[in-house]
Image 1 (cartoon, helix red, strand yellow):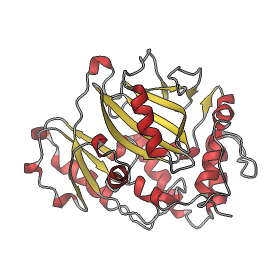
Image 2: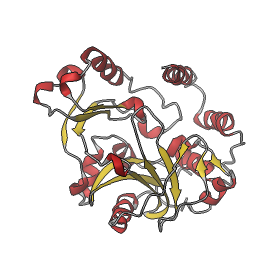
Image 3: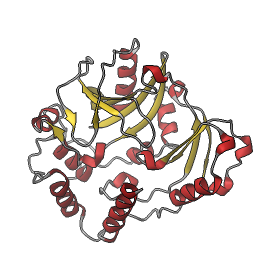
Image 4: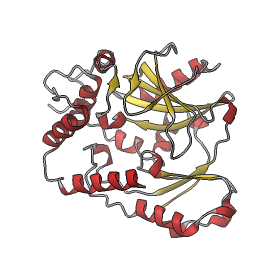
Length: 305
C-alpha cells in the first residue's frame, strides 16, 4: 500500500507541475531517475532515444494504439483479428457493468492504464469484494482527460479512461504461467525482446532480455526482478515475431506484447515508451548497446522539425 501511495503522490506532484514545458520536465525526470544528463542533440542511449522519440515524433494512430479497446480496430486493420482476446464490453462507468452477464472468470482493465494498479483479475465472481472493486474502477473512470501524463507521454493527452473487460486466459502455472513476449521493433524489425515469466499480480515477475534469435543477453533491468530460469524458445516463435513486426511496421519504435498459450497467439498491448524511457540497465553499457540498434529516419513524416 505504501508503494501505491507514493506513486499516487508522485503523480499528483507531477500534475501540479504540468505548467513546466515538456522538454524541461523530461530532462529533469531523466536526471532524477537515471542519474544521467539527457542528450537530445545526439542521443546514443536507448533511454535517450525513447525521450527523443517521445518529444519529437507525432502520429495520431499512436493515440489509438495505446487505448486497450480502440487498439482492437487497429489490429483488425492489419488483418490480425484472430489474435484478439474476447472482449465482454467497454464502459464509461462501473455502474454500467452488469456483472450477472459476465462469466465466472474475467479480467478488468483501465483502457489507458499501465502496470498492476490498472488490472483486476477475477477468478471467482462469487468472491468479489464489490465495494472495493467499484471504488477502484471509479478511480480509473474519474481520471481527468486534460491531465498531462506524468512522464509527458503525449499519446495519452486528451484520452478518456474507460473500463474494459476481457476473457481470463488460462495458462499452465507449472510452465511459468502466462509468459509475456515483448518485442521491441524499429520500423517493424525486431531488435530485442523482453520475456516476462512467473507473473503473479502484485508481485515481481522475472524479466529477461533476449536477442531476436531468442538468446538471453547478459543484462537485466535494474528496476525489475531478473528471470531466474531458462525459458525455451516457443515452437511458434517465428510466428510470434512476424506478428509483432507486422503490427510495429508503421512506427519508428514500438513494443508489441504477445502471449503464447499452447500455440495460440494472443495480443497484449502496444507501448511506445517502455518505462516512459526512465529505466536503467545492469550493466549500464547496455543502455548504449540497445540504443545503437535503433535508427530514426527524422526526415520522415511525423517528426517535428
